[in-house]
Amino acid sequence: MNHPNPAIVAQSAVRRLPRAGLLALCTAYVLAGLIGRSPWRSADLQAFGHMLSLADGTSAWLAPAIPGALPDLAVLLPYWLGALGILGLPFLPADVAARVPFGLLLALTFTAAWYATYHLARRTSAQPVAFAFGGEALPTDYARAMADTALLALLACLGLAQLSHETTAAQTQLGAAALAYYGIAAFGTSPWRPALAVLCGLLGLTLSGAPSVALLLGLAGAAIHASQDADSGEARPPTKAWTLLALALAASLPASLLALWQWRFEFPPSRPEDWRSLGQMLLWFTWPCWPLVVWTLWRWRRQLTALHLAVPLAVVALGLGSAAGSRSDADRALLPALPALATLAAFALPTLRRSVAALIDWFTLVFFSFSAVVIWVYWIAMQTGWPRRPALTVARFAPGFEPSFSTLAFVVAIAATLGWIGLVVWRAGRHRQVIWKSLVLPAGGATLSWLLAMTLWMPLLDYVRSHEPLARRFQELAPGASCVWYDGLSPVQRTALRFHAGIRSMSSEPAAGCGWRAVVLRPAADPPRLPGWTLSGVIVRPTDRNDRIAVYRQEAFAGPAGASIRP
Image (cartoon, rainbow, N blue to C red):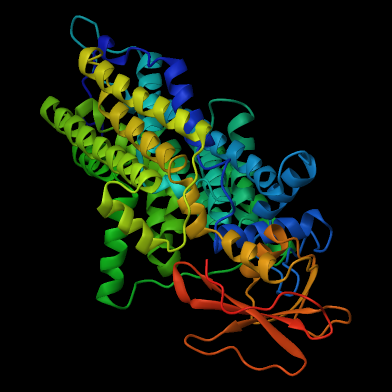
């Protein structure tokens, strides 16, 4: 049964969004955080350690591992990409070279999200109502405007910024899921491109630690296309569904051959606070898309089984289920669903009331302008010590931090701020009727905030979030050290010493000719006395006084000795 379409869109509302502006926005978003920073601790730095091991040949490509740690057999693709970047771009610092493939993957994510929405919006069920005397939006122009809207919604998602710029499995899952989403959405529009996209996307998910998600996504796509074929009433087999099913099974083969299958789903959360934490994460992680998605579900409630809604709904439902079952990594599990969530948000715009659109504009203007002012005020406080309260906050947050001035970062930040002011003026003065107008400011504001943070605040963030200060202090305590006998160092800490301090040989067992030793101390514990070793000093992480490492030198080795050294 066909239900009335709630979208009423005139041709004047689908005017083309300037390509140069959209490209500049996406480029700024991708590059910010890709260059000019150190690998951040935990997942980002640990993944970089695997990439270094693959690049220098100390680890097998089918069993990537940081020396001294167990191999990560469930995740392969992100480590392969980073290692290939290091090997293929030897003229760049290793950490920057490792991030280049991930920057290209984020660009691929944006492209796939745009084309997925474009093909869904071209469907007859998604087209706006025809006017009695003409003047309704043309199918191609309408689909292009909806694709632009979805891309702006994706850029505006607060949860996308940090995780999409890390070199982790979450980022490769995002790119692979976006590629598979495009393939399923566009299946049947081309003889081979969508099928290739589905195969590569599902294969990417399988090799990124999510083979179960890949299989479920392929099965969901097959089921949706099977139902569409059945509803069409055509007397032919559901060839698209069978093809999608075959592609899903083919993409699952590496999981069986390489023993990649894993299932970490724990549903439902057992405690009320788990549900509360998940709900809070969803509210900020998917902002500003989730209110628009709720509106889409309400206004299009009679067409939810149509392909243009069923495909993104299936992807989002799978992402929500994965997030609910992942607990501590719920945000990373939800990340691959953001492109589909942005598509659903885009379909709210043709039905949005003008007063609601104006409210979104004003809220966005106030929120992101305030965020930009805060970032600038804290940067001025770091540079000059005034205003005093923000300066004291930074001193408490990062004791020992010494700010530095970068002319390039300052110029980029000024240009981004002027661009935001120009965007606000442009938005207020022109294009009042275009369908994508309500998401220009959210996308521009999110990009502005991320760009300012990755320029003005980068030295502070590197000091707090990376292990580079730890490695520099180790160099001071153990000058000229090339090997370390360690006790309790995590793989992340060992990667930091290897990359930042140039320590090429690390062993948990005594090594002949190695005159330096690093011992992780328990909270509030004094450095132990070790026969034959002299305490050179204690390294304390600036933001966690319980994270301490005692550095010893063998008595037969000459070297500086001193008291506790704190960053």
